[in-house]
Image (cartoon, rainbow over all chains, first blue to last red; front, side, top):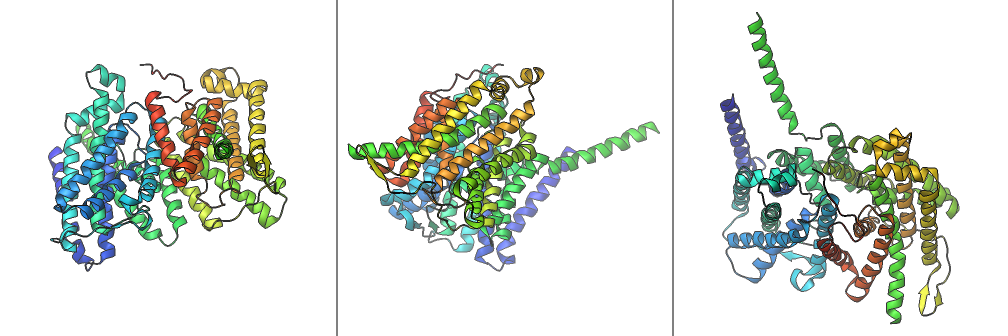
Length: 323
Length: 291
């Protein structure tokens, strides 16, 4: 049984990966459709990174779009001022964002619940304002152009982003399934119990912030390279809400839930884009309905399906024994 | 010096609006344990309703003001009964996400009905500004101060000297015991949401003449209201008022001396610093979790 589900997962992953690889050709290399998928991968990375904090560590952040913005601006500024290989630039963007996350965490590790929510919300709102007003660094309203690395064509950049996504997700999966991940979960379950079993909660909470902002910053960097432009209106605070929505709707106690949510919420605006109000209404109502009726997220539908199957099996077994 | 006085006075006016928003948030949190991120958007919808009465139906300012507040009370109770009640005992994150969902939905609905173009909103008191000492005041600013003071006195009396106030305070302290003592707890919850929505609605109607009337008008007020609530420790009504005034004056100083758009960032910085020193706010109780 265990082996079978492992095999299924393996097949599923390969099919998805294969689809993503042939996708540009299916879509006739259309920029619009490729951007849609790239946004899914970027939001996917960010949602999983945010879920390290929220789903695994129990620390709320309503300002993660701020980290995305810092990452994207870091790439734009470094690529503009210095001649560095683009992989190094991307890594530097992650490190800069992680550093900002570290500074935020000094205050944030001492806070709980809504105090933390308000502080992170304030962060998410402040970053675009700072990007707008720090004109000498960020060009203010007009934003910055990012030249695509010369050695990459549009198609190879697409594959590079997909490769990065797989790599980042693999990293995060392994972090969460190591002793770090177990420490995060124990902090979520009970900080006091974690502390009394020898877990340094302050250290691990800081670590959560740093890891999460590191990957989010790199996702922002990928965004900057793909779009080729960063501006102060790219990641308003509603994107932070959307990221939270992805996690909760997908299912925050699972690794795959946020990815599912990211795919879903990248597709919805595509259908409702004609009028701004409709997108907000649809997303808002989906959030409320899911929380009211499926508080564990859509990923539980899969579990529910699995459970039914095992129940059926148990049923048939007991029937066989009875007869 | 004169500029400083003028800026401080302007800050106090904004501060009273923030305080109104903060009291609504704190009251709802204290009684029903829910942090309402949709508070600002509910206020915005109330303001639009009063605008509709005023402009489309053509009623006088005070009639439409009162009608809008009645609408706010019903609106608050409906939101509580239909949605919030079901997540009242859920984990905080679920509550936050529900109210954020409502935030988005209300914002979209308002945009759909009234559009995204800003409307001008008339003030209750028109007239030229006049000078007191070296400070210029406009009638609308005095109106804001007056309404805020009146509401605070009203709520103080309500909490301190009426039976409903007593029931509210008892419920805040211990829900189970108070329901055993014969207090209709569900009624108290309803009333709290109605009162919170009214306070928010008043804040919205007072803001609209200063900014403009549009679906995103209350976002900044909401943030500042949250900042004020955090200053006050999130469970302390007088603390929220003082927090609102501090945030108002401070952000007005920042926008005059540093740059008007940066005030949100600097308020955030101040909050981080304050919370670093006192993690439960300036007037908050020390938080001890029982194991």
